[in-house]
Image (tube, rainbow, N blue to C red; front, side, top):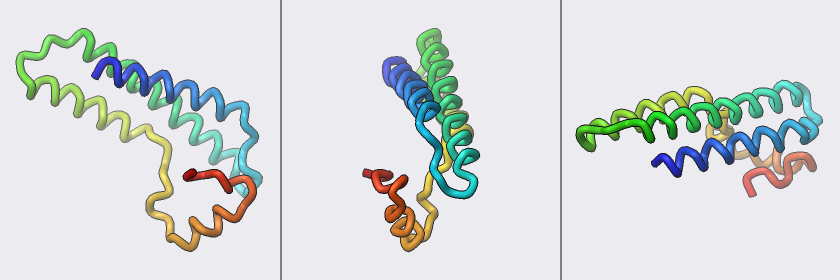
Length: 107
């Protein structure tokens, strides 16, 4: 799990950095959306980085102790992760895909 969390942290940090130099979507509120997503990935990088350090230092007495530590990291990660579009109406998702700026989303 330490290796997995370290990789997640590194990937989220790199994605945040890549998104920071990518122009925001040219829709109403696009800059705010882009900023929120970057902040979310920066948060994930932080949470998983600290989670890797915590798990590396942990000497669990049982599998339940390890699960408790992992559950705590995942709960915190869920609180900072960028919003997803899972709850969007399929018609809205289809309309978004028609926008040139969004054509590759979800690919």
